[in-house]
Amino acid sequence: MRENTLKQKLAAGKAVFGVMLTFPSPQVVEMLGGLGFDWVLIDNEHGTVTIENSEDLIRAAELSGVAPIVRPVSNKPEIIAPFMDRGAWGVQVPHVNTAEEARAAVDAVKYHPLGHRGMFSGSRPADYGLSGSTADYVEAANRNTLVCLMLEEVEAIENLESMVEVEGVDVFFIGSGDLSQSMGYPGQQTHPEVQELMAKGVSIIREAGQVAGVSCPDSYVPKFLDMGVQYFHGSVNRLLQSSSTEYLKGMREAADSRGL
Image (cartoon, rainbow, N blue to C red; front, side, top):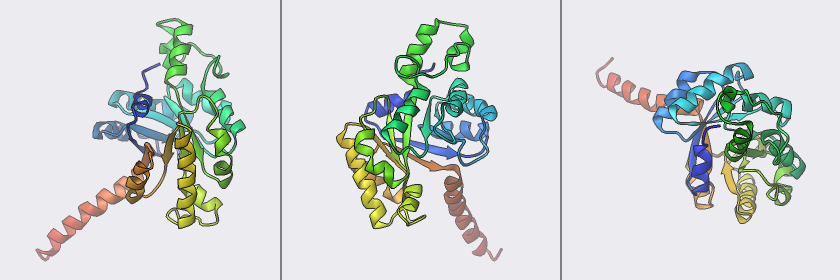
C-alpha cells in the first residue's frame, strides 16, 4: 500500500483541492496530477466509472502524483471492497446519516482490528503478494486508507455530534447540493438557511478536532477556509466550462475587432 500523501497533507493542517471525474479517462487523471491537484474523486455514483475501468484511473493517479479517492454508489462492503482491492487510496461514501452508518463505512475499508474488510493479500495494493508479509500489508493499509463520509441530509447534521465520535473517519464532508435539496431548496447552495446549517456542521466537526470538507461555489471557498475547512473539490465539467468560457471570450473579441 502506497503512502497516502492526501492523509499526510490533512494531518499537517493543509487545505487540499481535488477534482471530481465522472467518466473513465486515465489521460485526464494524468493531466490533473500534472496540473498540481492534490486528489481526484473517481465518481462511481453519478457517472460511467465502474469497478472494471477504475483500476486504470487509480494507476494513472498514482503515476502522476494525485491521490485516487473513489466515491462508491452506496455504503455497502460488497461495493466498497472491489475498489479498495484495485488500489483506491480511500473512499468518499455518500449519504451517511448516522453513527451506525459511519461505523459501517470504516468497517468496510479497514482490516482487523479496525474493521472487517475482506482479506486478499494478492491484490494490487498488496503488490500482488509478491513482496512483504500479509501482516505488513494490513498495517500499511489500515494506516494509509482514507475514509470520508458525505453528510448530505438534514438528518446527518442532526446526528453529527455522535458521528464525529466514530473512530477511523478521516474527513466529514458536507455536500451542499443534496443538503439544499433535503432542506427544500434544491440547487440553492447559497441560500442563507443552507449556509447556516453548513456552518453549524463545520463548527461541530472542527470542535471535535476532526477534518471538515464542503462542496460550495468557488467564491465561497475563502469563507470556509476561514472556518477551518481543509477538504474541497471541483469538477472536470466546471473546470472545462470556466476555462473554455474565458478562452472563447478572448478569441471572439480578437476576431470581432478584426471583423472576422
